[in-house]
Image 1: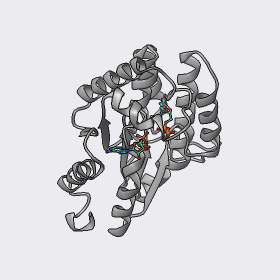
Image 2: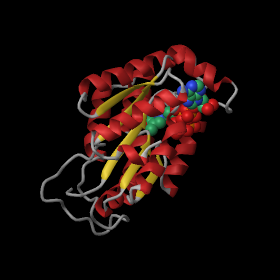
Image 3: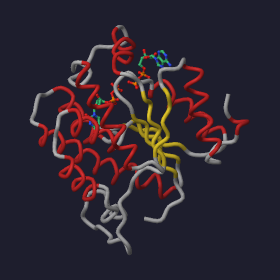
Image 4: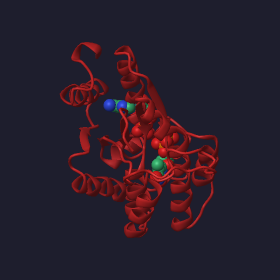
Amino acid sequence: MTHHGLFISFEGIDGAGKSTHIAGLADAFQSEGRAVTLTREPGGTLLAEKLRNMVLDDAMDPLTESLLIFAARRDHLVRVIAPALLRGDVVLCDRFTDATFAYQGAGRGFDVKVLATLERWVQSDEGLLGDPTGNQPMKPEVETVIEPHLTVWFDLPPEEAALRLADSRVPDRFESQPVEFFRRVARGYAERQLGHPERFARIDASQNREAVWQGIRQVFVEKGWLQAAALP
Ligand SMILES: Nc1ncnc2c1ncn2[C@@H]1O[C@H](COP(=O)(O)OP(=O)(O)O)[C@@H](O)[C@H]1O
Ligand SMILES: Cc1cn([C@H]2C[C@H](O)[C@@H](COP(=O)(O)OP(=O)(O)O)O2)c(=O)[nH]c1=O
């Protein structure tokens, strides 16, 4: 799929600080005249938000969980992400497939080979350029697997994330997992980074908010995607 958009995902264990900084980046891109699509996973469409509620609220086996998450992802790609990239938008997505490898793969111990197969199927651009109902799919000339241009990984020790979350919100099914679960998830993200070093930017999320923001700012300025002057 040829497009002029920019696809950026944000990752890290719960409480690492993603939500705190995504809105600031959206403002920075908008102040430079770029259209921004701000979205999240699981979710981002009516159907995917319904699937999100099921995944976050109901106990299920890891294959069911992975299939629902990838089903939500496909709908999100077809209806929101691919059209936004074709329009030339900057897509800022709170979590994407690395979260599935970290949470369902490393966290829940589900087979990463199955996840890799689902990743290839779901993120194929085949059918993405057609009608989102799927009635009139168009075949791409060369099939490609859509993935973020950049993944900003907020790396934070699980013990610190737990402290930050303790008084901030009611935990969902994942957030209420023991710290050992998040140690595995954090290792899962580290493995994903090793597999995709060119795509990942690791941010030391244990720093204070201002230092974390400066780390993010530096990544975007170095890539030439934002001008230093546009950022506080
Ligand atoms: N650098 C930081 N230092 C201390 N607390 C932080 C920092 N960044 C965010 N927080 C706080 O930690 C909690 C989790 O942050 P949040 O952005 O919601 O994380 P995430 O979206 O990654 O789950 C919030 O209460 C937030 O205010
Ligand atoms: C995208 C994704 C999220 N998740 C989990 C991680 C989070 O605990 C939860 C929701 O993520 P998130 O949107 O970060 O929740 P919040 O904004 O409330 O912190 O879904 C997976 O287990 N697999 C996935 O593929």
